[in-house]
Amino acid sequence: MIRLLGAVGLVVALASCTTQPRATPPSTTSTAASTGTTGTTTVTTTSPRIDTPRNVASVDPCTLFTEKDLTKYKYGPFSVPPAPYEQIPGTCAATFGTGAPDDLVVLVGVLPRAYDAEKAANPGGHQGLIEGHHVWFSCGGDAAQVSCAAWAAVAPEHSLSVSLGQKGGNESRLLLNTQSLITDVLTRMPKAS
Image (cartoon, rainbow, N blue to C red):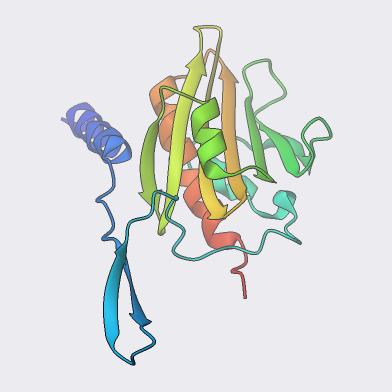
């Protein structure tokens, strides 16, 4: 019975992860003509949804996630603590586990790349909505190495990136944990003033 409930919970979680967000209504702008009359113009936008823009200028990505974020899902503790990942400026990497080849590798960063560019560069993913931000999810790899990543629109020309990779990892589990981690990280990012 417990296994059945666990499987049902996983299916519900996966279904919610793949559910497309409801379209937001077009924004409406009131304009005043030179005659003093007021009209209403409806403007439909195709840009990603960013309900609360984030301050991306002074963010240290190594402070955006904690050991507890993933130990609650039976990963960890840190086998390599968070440190800047020099190969991708603006990112931070950490490893959870025992120092074995199948440890979970986590990469978190704020990238100077628009959400739509990340979405185009990672076809085959799916879009979600977390905390009022469009998020693009994509998983890949093979049986030997699986990785899942998410990119959230946090500012017009910046994306928050979260990636989890594991040798012999379970794609469904990594996808769920990627969704959870990007939610945690989004709540820690400072809001733009």
